[in-house]
Length: 434
Image (cartoon, rainbow, N blue to C red; front, side):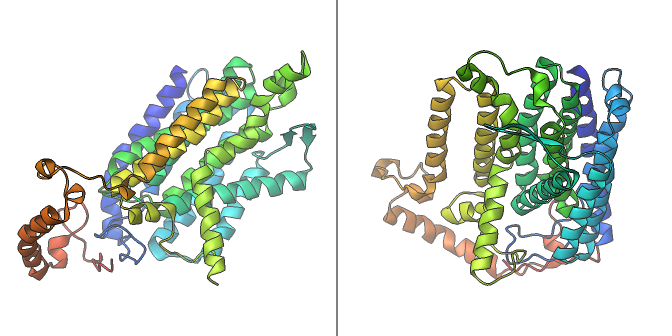
C-alpha cells in the first residue's frame, strides 16, 4: 500500500508542477479557442492541460517500475506498456484537437486505433463471468470487439461530461478511488496477482486528477481539453478491462457451501461486470441522453449543444460550484455503493444507506425549486432570492444604477484578459458569445 501511495503522490506532484508551465505554453501556442455558445465560462481559457497529465502518468509508471514490490508488475505483465502505448496515441490525437479542432470521426477512429494497440499488446478481455452460467471464454475477435467498445464508450462518456470547471477530473478521481479499493481488495484479500496492474492504473489515475484539480477548479485557470479527458477516460477503461478480463474467477475459489452462500460469495466476481458501468454511470447516462436528444432533433450525435446534465443543473438555478458538487455526490454514491455491495451483499444497512443518501441527493438537486417564505423581520439577512417581492424590488432598485453603469463601461480585450492571467498573448481571442 505504501508503494501505491508513493506512486500516487509522485504522479500528482508531477502533474501539479507541470500544469503551470503547460498553461503558459498553451497561451503562447494559441490553444485558446473562442467562447462558443454552449460554453459556460466567460473568459478565454487555455487548454492542453492533458500534456501535464500525460507526463504525470509517465512519471508514475516510471517510479512504480523502480519500486521493490511493484517492479514485478512490469516483469510479469505487459499491461503497463500496453497502457502507455495507447495513452500516448490518444494523447497525441487530443493535443492536435485542442489546437486545430480535428473532425469528430477522425477522433473516433483514433480512439479505436488506440484501443487496438492495447489489445495487440495483451490488454484485452479474455473471459467474462456471466451470472447463472459461469466463466465464459471469449474468442480473439469477441474479446477485441468488446475491449474496443468499452474503451470508446468510456472515453466519450468522460469527454461528454467535461463541461464545467473541475467536473471531469473530480468525477474520474472519485471513480478511480472506488476502483482502487475494489482492485486492491481482489489483489490483497484473494492473493490474485493479476489484479495488481488494475490497482496500479487506478492509483496513477487518481494522482493525475488530484494534481490537475487545483488548477482546474472554478474559476479554472486551464482546461484539460480533449488531450486530458480522452486520456483519463482511456486509463479508466484500461483498469476496468484488466480486472474484468484478466482475473480468473475460478482462482478465488468461491464455489463452496450452499447455493445461497455461493450466490453471495460470487458477488465480487460479478461486480467487475457492473463496476466499469457504475464508475461512469453519470457520464454514461449523459452520453446516452445526448445521443438520443441529438438524433431525435435530426442532428449528428457528435453535434455540440447545451443539453448536458451539468447545463441542466445550471438552468435549474444551481451555481457553478454547487452543480459540480452535486455531480460529485451522485458519482460517489453510485461507485461506492457498488463497492460496499461487493464487500457485503447481504447487508440491509447498505441498501437503506443508499436509499437515504439518494433521497438527500434528490432534495439537494431540487433545492432551487423551493422558495421558502421568510418572515419580514428576517428578509434583510437572507439572500435576495428568499426575500419577498417588495424587499427584492427595493434591493434591485438600489443595485440597478451600478449595474447599468457597469454595462455602459466598455471592456477591452486587454482589460478582460485571460482567466487568471496577468498578460494576454497576441494570438488569443476574447470573443464572448454567451
